[in-house]
Structure formats: C-alpha cells, structure tokens
Length: 227
Image 1 (cartoon, rainbow, N blue to C red):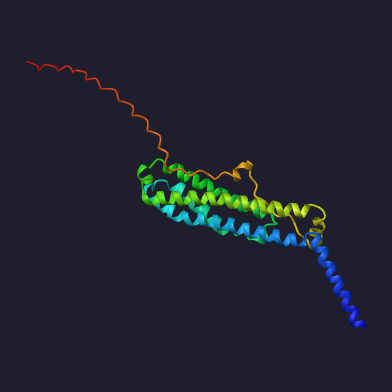
Image 2 (cartoon, rainbow, N blue to C red):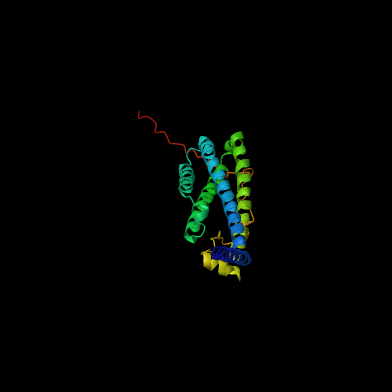
C-alpha cells in the first residue's frame, strides 16, 4: 500500500515539474537552441561553398596575371586560415571564438576584394569563360552568405531574449543556459547587404604616353684639308 502511495507522489511531482518547466520556457529553450544550431550550420555551409571556389579562381587569375604573386598569395593564405578555423555550434557561447572566426572570414573577404580589383587590369582575363562562371558562382555565394548570416542573427537574438527575460531567465540560471555570441559589424546594415562582385566594369584607360621632343640636328663644321 505504501509503495503505491509513493509512486503516486513521485508521479505527481514529475507532472508538476514538467508543468513548471514548460511554463518557465524550458521547451522554448530547446526549440530556439535547435534553431540557432540549424542557422549556424547553414552559415558554415555557405562559407565553405565560397572557400571551395577559391582554388579555381586563383588558378584562373594566375593564368593571365602571373606577376600578381602577392595578391594571389594573400588569397591562398587567407583561405588556409579559414580552413583551420572550425567553430562548432557548441562553441557559440564563446564570444572570443566567434570574434576569431569572423576575423579570418573578414580577412578572406578583403583578400578576394583585392584580387577582383587586380583582375580589372586584364581584359583577357575578364573575357575568360571560366572566370565569368566563377564570377557568377561567387556572387551567388556572397548573397547566400548574407541571407544565412541574417537568419543566424535573428535566431540568436530570439534565444538571447528568452535567456534574459523573466521568468525564463530563471530557467536559464538553473540549467546554465548562457547567451550566445553574435556577429558584430561596425555598420549593422552590412549584414543585410551582400558584397557586390562586379567583373563587368571597364578598366580605366591608361594615360596617353608623353610625346618625346623632336631632336634638333645641329650642323657640325667641317675643317678643310690642309694644302
């Protein structure tokens, strides 16, 4: 008899705990956490897509602009650093890790920008079919990165609001749920605007060569032979 009473008490306590946890946002934390992880996986997927385009892009540019070694090396090294930076969803609670990730991705973006500026000086490169195909893929990838970052930002914002507001913040304290790190940009509008990749701009015309002055011939006096 006593055993049945104990079981009923435990069952009642369990039901009460479930009710309390649901009312304090426990289930919401699980849902929003999964949303953050899903959004972050898409961010990583699009950044990897960009990294995969770089070897072919560098090889194509190198075929026409071998003298641009510093620029090509800069892109290659930046891509290498990106490849060595692995930020899993479990590390999103670490602001420093997120900052490091954002820095290497930003360095790669800058290196790519310098490479594209250099390409403007090579009309034959710009007319290359493979180069133009890479241009289209790169531009599409930059747009996808922008969309993925925006979705991730929204997902993290929703999670962090839940972690701060009452009474769900009590659940966060009990279970140790921390606010997740965000992307940081100097200009908040930069997240909603994809970087423009334009290979179609005409290179600036080279300055006309300076005409050299026409040399003036000076007659040299001839000394008559001695008699």
